[in-house]
Amino acid sequence: MKLPRRQFLHLAAGAAILPAVSRVAWAQTYPSRPVRIIVTFAAGATTDVHARLHGQWLSERLGQPFIVENRPGGGGTLGAAEAIRSSPDGYTLFLLTASHAINASLYEKLPYNIVHDTTPIASFYKGNYVMVVNPSLPVRSVAEFIAYAKASPGKVRRHACGFKLANDGVDTRALQAYLGHKSIQHTVRYTELAPTRFKGFWRD
Image (tube, rainbow, N blue to C red; front, top):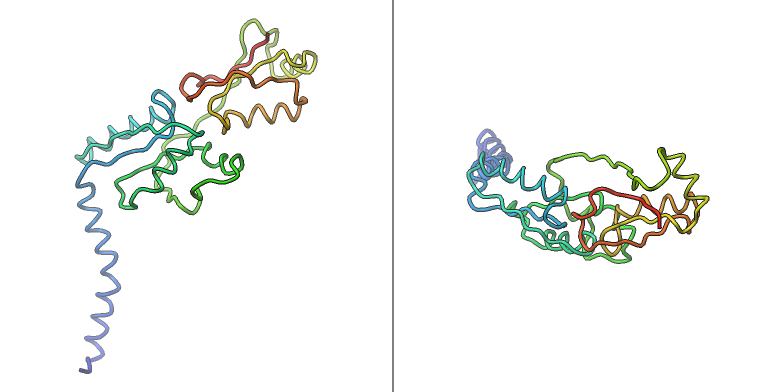
């Protein structure tokens, strides 16, 4: 059967619009069931707090539960792998942090590619790092801290979390590279992130 040109153009236009219409229809009915938010750190960590606050906000506005699931371990790699293995249907959200980008350079092999296997949809928050020291440390500025660390090799200790340290270790490694490897000891490690929200230095 030979279609008139005008009818053919109408059908072609309708076919081109169909995917967009389908996406709009899907968006209008989403979510039709609970949505889970995977947080790759322990309860009480900054990421966890933001996930719960935003999850509550989304639940109130969209009428479905947004459930936070904490999947800590491996500096965030275990939870990331769980999220990326999930069905890409919009019902598993994943809070990606700087740790996940840094892990690509710390781990020789990961079961995912954080750039190619994830799709960013929103920015939740931005954080700043603050350097604090124990009051017993005789320094009141970064310059004084550097001078003290250089003059007292091995006496300054710094806490961290996780096995590979992720972003909690990058700043210390940068200082070690600048001051000399033995100037700062990275000896106090916690298994999860929440206990170490304030990054501190102290002396023996």
